[in-house]
Amino acid sequence: MEYAKKNGMGMRFHVLAWHNQTPRWFFAEGWSDDKDAPLADRETMLARLQNSIADEMDYVNATWPGLVYAWDVVNEAIEPDHEAPNMFRTKSLWYQILGEDFVFIAFREARKHQAEGQKLYYNDFNVAMPNKVDWVYSLVKRLNDEGTVDGVGFQTHIGLDYPDFADYEAAIRRYAALGLTIQSTEMDIRVPGADPASQMKLAVRYRDYFAMMRRLRREGQQDRANQGYRFDI
Image 1 (cartoon, rainbow, N blue to C red):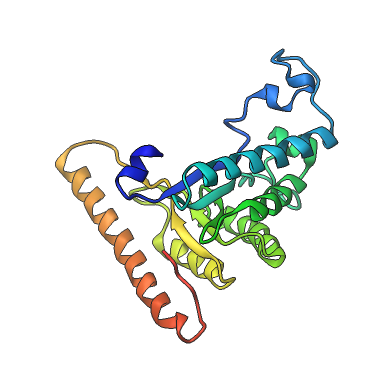
Image 2 (image 1 turned 90 degrees about the vertical axis):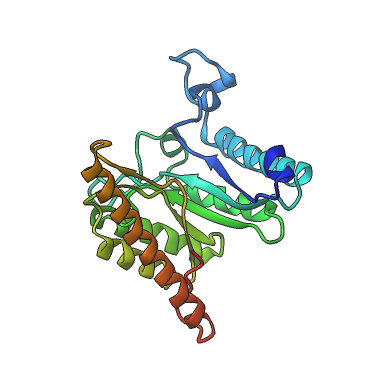
């Protein structure tokens, strides 16, 4: 954070609520680090979720005012392999204790503590893949209807041949139609090797990706004046 401040770099904060990097003791009765400790009750976890978000956001905004421009509020809440009607990652302890409410409570709390100019994001992987896009869209639409989300973070862990950029663009357009902004947040492209042929394919893949994003950004800048799609990419 100090390096970013010194060098005039904006920061996007990752992440306020994520099952994967939250230690089990955070969910346990009495903060116990015993692997078999019983989980805390719903009321306790509601307080812990709200307090942790409030404490983090207030501390960061007071210590480094104006440095953070975006917050990933919730990360990877959707499980792409689940069947309808449950789209949520049920192995998450957030979900096991609070159900899907944890996502909405997290965004409501973050909205209370965001500073001027900051945006709140739902961040996930495979948000453009056909088996997941409907679930993510359903979630962010509900958040958007509440007025608690500003955008969708595309992690953008992709390969040389997948996803099809036609699917990717269609997903961006679908989220943007809600008035949400789009960010590529963790981009990497899997490549089989360092041989010249693989590296050339990698270069072409990056070229095609950024050509798509630049085109959508230009389109968004034009359509914004006409109150159409908003591609803040």
